[in-house]
Length: 164
Image (cartoon, rainbow, N blue to C red):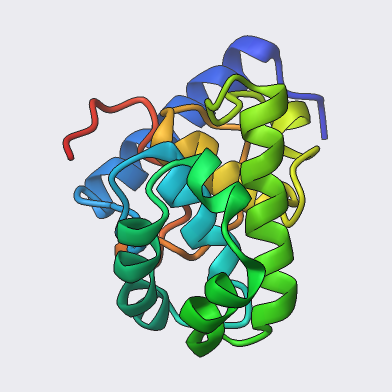
């Protein structure tokens, strides 16, 4: 079979994206969040948990610790008590506090906007980074997440304007 030209490949990809938008017009992340930082924390907490459980847990967490600094300096035992319902709470506490600390110290309290920088954060692997890049920043690095309504991967709707 002859190799597809770059022009033909781009046309095929554009058609696939068009069909995905047509099939899944209202894709949105199922994790409740108001900022990139909240989405990052919620996505870390979602490992081995459900979005519903995370969405029941994060309001108390973000009310008490609304900024990366607040979460970074919080007593770990207090954070553990809040995130305990999501499971694996000790490891998740270390991850979200470590990520908050690094965001504060290395990224001027702003969630990084690139894959390599996100992957430096504790508790963040490619799947979490893709969810954050696609949902919070509208960037598509190629996602394999199912953390969106309708079951389509995060990032498929990245070319469209977001409403929150």
